[in-house]
Amino acid sequence: MGAESEVLLGMGGCVDHEVRWDAAVIEKLVREHRISAAELSEPGHPGEGGSVHGEREMLLVLLSQLVRGSGSERFVDEPTALLTFSRRFPVRKSLGGSSVRAAVALDRLGLSSTLHLVSIDDDVRRLLPRSATYMCSARLDSTHPHVIVQYPAGARVRVGEEVLEAPQANRLIFVNDPPNSELRIAPEFGLAVSAARVIVISGFNTMAGLEAVGERAGQVREHLAGRTPGAVVVYEDAGFHHDDQREVVLRTLRDGVDIWSMNEDEAQHYLGRELDLLDPAQVVTAVDELHDLVTVPTLVLHTRYWALAHGPRDLRAALALGISTASARYVHGDDWQPTERDAIAGMSATGEAERAAADIEAGLGSTAVAAVPGLEVAEPTTIGLGDTFLGGLVAGLVQS
Image (cartoon, rainbow, N blue to C red; front, side, top):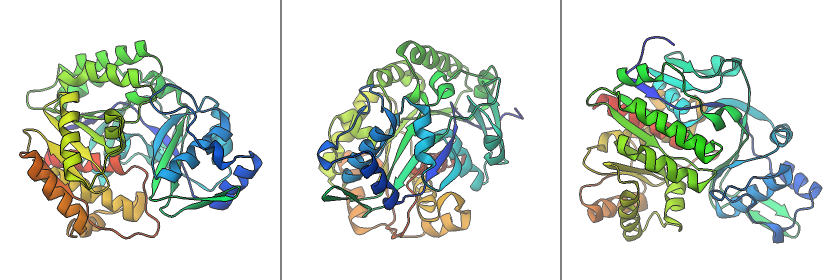
């Protein structure tokens, strides 16, 4: 690890295999596995601790969520199924994990960071941004790719006599990653905490076992107690494989966190209901519920239409930077550049998003809400938008 940075990003990362969408391949697999539309449900439903078993159940999950335009992260109990599935498509290798993608965004914005990793291999070393230093708790190299399937809005798949169509773009993540399941903490982490101005904590969602989750969250909390006065701790939520683990992390870390950030999928999971993001009354009620649940000073909620910060901290500029940075990735993919982000930052939001944002802000009082610009894109990138938003948000915190 090099010199400590003002920004510390933890707790883990990975290599992603980004699958290029091909409906013909999906339909061929549907026929091979003899899947019918009547079967469409969600094996291993998120939060209930169930695993996805093999390629056939991966397809059932994918098709069930495609119909709703939803996305999630799911554990697959057969590692070979992940590779078998991904090898059927053209695949792009990239770095994944909230903290790592946030580091990439910060690098593009001219800011360095220090990463805490739990696994390492040559792909990680090759793809990490040059401005990022890292510590790693792993003693040996290992590779456990996360398979990400991204489908576009309007994607159509024939299943028997029915044609399924996606109402919007989204992505699913399939994982079996032992290092991230253990999430061991590197000895240097405490020193890095004491040097940082902004500390991001994420990655507990794929851990295995309540005892391990409680132990790791407790260790992180002890290290956070050593931060310098004025340092800001951001927790980025994620799609937990087990709801009881989410509760352990929340209960253990909430007192050491200044900003609790989540996306719309995670918010709806906490609420136990779907949320109309363009209905200000629904959103106002939901934000109050969520803030009462997490009980940290500031709640950040980032969605496809707007992002808001509810609490005493003025995050308006940071929200705007997060939105424009994520929007640059949405339009231009992993290779987005600062000039493209700057161009998007000058765009107006869609009328419905702008109206909803204004009404939400009025309904919540002291809340800052920023609307997402209207972007018409033939092949949008939906992978890593929340992580890239996080990078922009952190950049805004550093610059404030």
